[in-house]
Length: 227
Image (cartoon, rainbow, N blue to C red; front, side):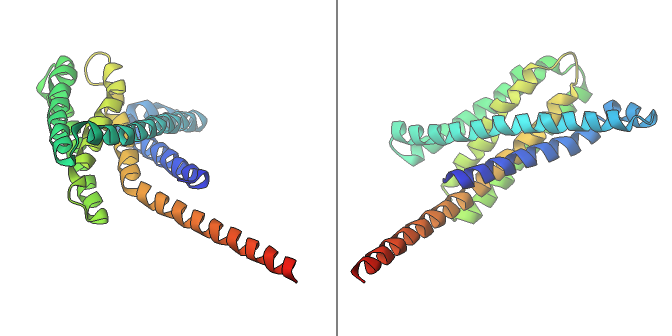
């Protein structure tokens, strides 16, 4: 990818992370925003909204780091296990392990009631269904069925590892930040997975045009020299 297209890709991820977190924050953390509106403190309201956006920007950067780390891991995995089929089975096993870890070691310690289990269960269902939808769309865009497993692995395993930052930071019972931080991670990761090929293709086109311009200038200089 060219630097120009990488910057565009980076900024789009940042914008998505910021907007999703800002909007989701108003709904999920309404109790945090409502007193400012009730008191007519509009400035404080927008300051709090800006904090949510900044939080989303931070999560988008984490998501991008996770994505490029996964791209490296994927190539290493294929190299180590020799075949894509075997690597896909390993990824399926890791998906199952991560889901088990989320339920037993992340959710269970903080789930003190049925309502808590509904909360965490709802988040897990959202993560899995978002992963499935993104993976299916990825297959449709690439027409490569084998990419389904790796897409699911990225959306579930890598997103969960990034999400653990929020899960480890919770205190007491349900922490709204646990829910809040999941949305930008899912949104940014889905965008990265689906949009990166477009930026790579655009980079190839830019390099091709640049090479054609160089050849055209070279030919022009040669013709000028002969004249």
